Length: 360
Image: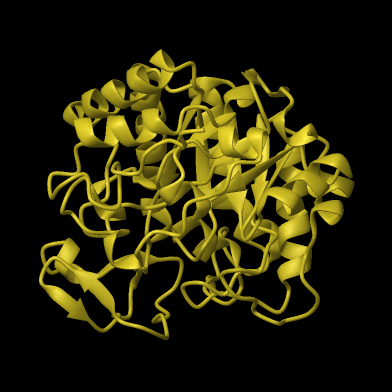
């Protein structure tokens, strides 16, 4: 199987083309410091060619999910260092995904201060779980132009912590309706300064964050995640195709480790036109491409064999199958999908590290 052959992602030599997709699991506790249980969880899945961590907030301002981990203090860095060492001990390669929730947050996370975004546009849809319970979304505060260098500095500091923790690379999360995605799309960005108004301006903040990451780690240890078809967190813009092709074209100039595109429609589709595909991105991005969202073994193999992708990130099947690569390699059956009520619970090992490897 091509899916199980090694490849190169920038500076990273990976043992196969299956990535553990980034999935929030909410096991870090209220202090957001990674735990020994998290180290066990990631080490169990270290046979993936690439282990991409759950989204990890780069600043207190970026918080928006109960008990998700951070990377903005020495203590958080030390917690992640133990995770990295556990994965490396199993021969794995691990990437830290960098996150700022932006408007997908609530004042309960920020001592009463409103969450921030590109523009003061309230998210429509379901409520949010806060430290004080389930509440309605709020209208965010638009970040001032002079605040944006500080946001970039937070990402830079997070990259420095990631380097100190020993991560092999970082992935800049600009997908799924979080802050950088909010700046990128016209649905959520109605600014009139240098960070809004045009396709080029809406890309600017993402470009500055990626440049900062490249400064710290080198471009060949930086990836970026995009969700051009996504409706999650109330996204989807009329000019999505032009915006995302522009972003990919600009990112192509940098020599990145990879571009991670959520091309699948398993999280829903905004239906503003036809779905964007990996071959479209191949036309403007010559570096390694990772596909994601709804892939299973056969569809992943097809994407690799056809040349559409260099790697496929697998999410939900990995929850209950820590040895997913071995199961693919040996045609062993997969465990059923785990109980969704355990996906984000702070209860501990249940539904997290208590899935056994297959016994032939």
